[in-house]
Length: 335
Image (cartoon, rainbow, N blue to C red; front, side, top):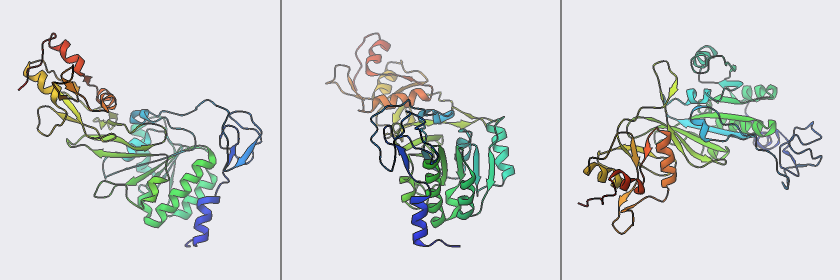
């Protein structure tokens, strides 16, 4: 039965009372009388003044999830096109519940047998938002994954997104919601949906056809990204990068551009080393020739993040200062 506007609002705002420890802002269960983190007996509805510090108990899950310190009460969504590996990446957090409209329990279990041997979640096949709502009432521990919001249609996907986020906050636990991608590469569905989540992940294909895990939004980390692929057994592994590369693109959307393929913006170091026969496979850099600089090069302002991206791909970063060592302190020849 369709929900009235008033019922929709109640679902979004009153599914759980937002009770917090007034002194450290830790979410409280309704039955708690003492804060589980700081021991305070002062609770408040929707308001806190966190003057007391507590230990952070975030989790870093395996694979590309290592880049995200996933905090309690953390709701994350992941989106991408068909066949990019969204479900496989999602399985790496080893959820306790896998709620699906995309698959039957049997093929979903086959994925977990392949990717997380020895770990099998409760798998619930649902058809609509009402079934999701009833199911969530009985789930007290996560993480939970829903695959996928897009499969429920526009209106129901928004309602379920609110249900999932409310469950996550109310249980002080973790959830992951999967979305499909539009033809333009964005998250499918209402634009409101990504704003509900603490982190938004995109699984996409870079210009050379390699899968990439991209952090589009995160309240806990920077906008980073990392490559991944699948081996012959379906296990998630790091691709092999056997050439020399420059790091192109913007924050959260970096990609490795093989040298000397045309189209690179930051290929000054690679070009200079190649002219001196000093460029080697598995080197990475990002700079342009700049004679006015003491090193002879200028790097992009985000070179630290570019370096981290290259090193996560298993490459050796070459900075302007490294060039002189590689060339035995000989100046770079200019064209």
